[in-house]
Image 1 (tube, rainbow over the protein chains, first blue to last red):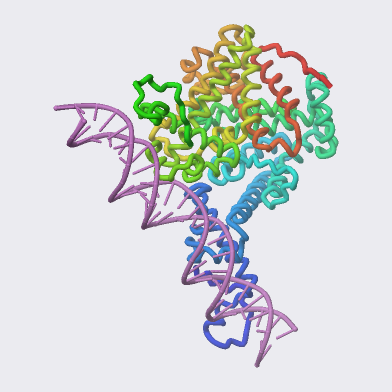
Image 2 (image 1 turned 45 degrees about the vertical axis):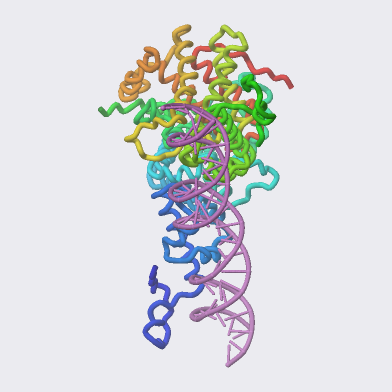
Length: 260
Length: 260
DNA sequence: GTTAACAGTTAACACTGTTCACTGAAGCTC
DNA sequence: GAGCTTCAGTGAACAGTGTTAACTGTTAAC
């Protein structure tokens, strides 16, 4: 792989030619190969789907023998676990950057950017998207809290939407359905979550949840091709849906472009 | 496996003890083992998830050697393909039976039963549900139309909802959003699908699609546990959502039970 | 300068899907 | 009923997988 990274080479009273070039501290070298491993794993993921990113395949990709990878990951599962965490963080960073680079003070427009950002990321990286959001393991080990790095990264990702919606609420409280329409049972459950939603009332949390649920389902169906049989290009449908759920949050959404 | 099925044993002038018992025509025996294979496959699916249903594991389950299964399926993929098709058909049958057994003339109530039926099936059979609806292969072989039995069974399944919604429309046409709200682009696409939706106008198709999209996303999220972190029990939320999208279709939904 | 830690290799194990040559019995035809 | 064909099923093998153990050197530390 020959990654001669002489940037951090310390200035030594040179002894021979070889050392003067590639002097890298051990843990720096370790971090480098660790990154290479994950890069190779991702390369395999995008080219051949999640099944293609195997331990041996990754090792082959960087000219190593399979057991060598066990110096970096305790198992194959741990490797893709780390890959998942990385992808979540990348997605989260991309979405947060989307909010800051384009200086839009209007929070509604920000949510619009966020939703479209997630959709675009999914469409541009279907293999990665499938790894993150496809079949989120219906394993029934509810006792040990999912404290895997992947799960934590997923929570950080979810927080992006959650916080923006809470901001919108505190900025311009939107009307929400009356309690008797949701039912006591649901109201009780949502009230319990109020502290995690920055003190929003249950009805408002319900609408936030609806936004997320619809957005999520919509994007999953489009990326996974389950919308294909009726809509070859779901862009316009997505736009309409986004407008619909945006208006439910009291955001004034612009009418369709019709740029045909 | 010793499945001595003497039901169909023809009455013969018996020759010896053995023959008088298990006389089964060859293709009848073949059909029997084929069913046993799929039964074993399903058993493995529910107990260990989709990864557990391997060729060798299935063979082991019924005391056969792995190559024997190749007399019944050309490959491992074909086996789970057949399993998928069977599960789709089972789900479809269960939903259709749900509509006929309970004699409900009201079409809106039928849709309610259907939606709840799908949800319950998913919650009761999470492994099967994951196999059918989780990560629907983002493979990009768009040229060869998916004519696999699994895909065809999926279409039959989808038709159940599609036809009922069309029935509802022709029974009591519901108000739909005006064209300028959806945009020319989307209207054009939906108009194209009108013939597949029994002549419904694009706006009505849009609402039908919205119903399906929301229902699908909702159930997937709940079954796959992605709703767990905010709602331990999503039943009340599902009920509220169902009421919401039911009203969008002009159906008068009953208020929440509040049976606490 | 000796010792310990560590990256990496080789060999092997148990497992997977798949193929090929083969056996034995069931079914069909003359 | 004899002879031939069909076909379910076996045994052995191949290429592939994740994983472990014992073993090399090289690198860092006391």
